[in-house]
Image (cartoon, rainbow, N blue to C red; front, side, top):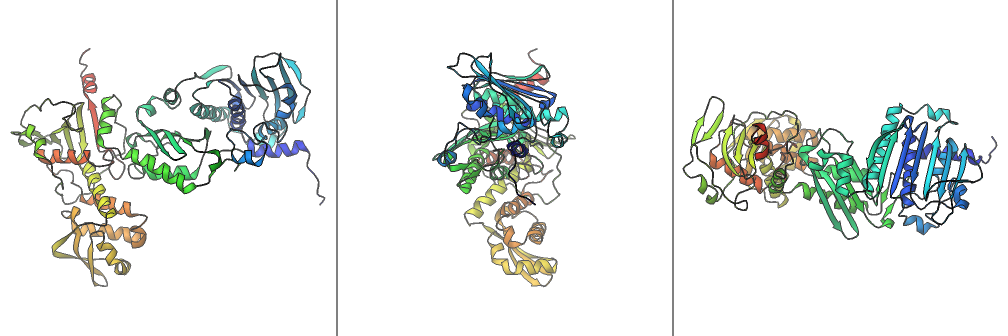
Length: 592
């Protein structure tokens, strides 16, 4: 076969396969050019999902007459001139491929007027063929009109989806760029009807407009810096997470990216507080010097490479993880501001097991207001109620965030009163988190206290389990389990972690052996350490239908206030909800 040089038009059509796989990709490239040109207002008009027409008009700096043809020429750009420029590129576009690729597979008209020009000039391109510039009328800025995308590459056009699907991708592209550029106004119309109108506004207002009020009300602001690396934005509260991945937006130096390293860091930050079926939502803006990130990885420019990927991963992980570890008081403050804590959660039933006393202590000052309060017992509806007595009217600064316990409902929930209204606590889920965090702290300090059993407990196990644990008995003793092998198919439990001393040692040991059988001791005590501790905490937490006294209920509330991530149990379920006085008044239509 003879080697030949490909025609320029065919080269551009091949390049278009990487850059412009659908109308949304073409729209993204054009909008990035408008933003690079300093536009403060952008009008987007689409027809048939962008397949028939994409028209973008901006008020940017414009293009001079002599450079109009160059704008549609491959590898012609105003943004870089050398390798040094490429390694420090700060603009959204820089490759000089997009417009040429679009011009090779569509009918394009480019109209522009620079600030010092007397009038605008227009140039037309069809299938890669350029006409001479002609005079035109428009204000300073640029308009690019793309019609019949893929008209000369029918094979590519067959891969496009329905008009509604392609429009949805285009609209998402506009929303992403709008999130990163709140100082720019965007107007989007489809088939002659305006679908989106965003005025220039502060970042928080743009978040509300694009991601909705639900995200705004249930998100927490992130702000952290380490040297030249900075992250800001918003992350969703774990209790408001959903199964969707649609609201996950990350921008690096203003560029929307899809990066596995960033996704992994955020997933790890949520791992301890999010139910495994749910996904976090976030909108984060990462800023760092351009020479520390490589954006020239793929023509679509959504993939990037960090020079110090591990450093970025750890920085992002710790910034979000610290925020999600905020004490209960922060959540109470949010609830007081009117944001609801409630969100639908899947049903979950705790396994039956021996009840365990609360390993908590509380200063007597907390009980002073409750002196004389007794427990009447449990009525037919399962409500444990104290003798009627009003709680003291203390100041906001004197009252604990979760308030004081009033009663226990159906042996499952603790009802408490705080300054904002009513607090409902799932006592098992809350105590599970308390025990889990204590276990983690003790293991980190290599000081897990053990409780020696008065009489060792013998249990029959699988021979494979005995063979697996035999070489690792010292490591298991390090987490509070002292086991000894008594035969090829049996072990004796001599001690358990002190925090779990009142749990059933047989069930506790079998839970550990089940984890060992699946993952092995070495992996279990290293990468799956937290999963093991979560399992132990679940066995050690106070169980449903365990009747608590008022001092025990209040002690649990105080422990929650002192525990990180107390808003969610180890499985990601919420541990408490706040019902404000305003919400209670609305239920009973008070004040109407």
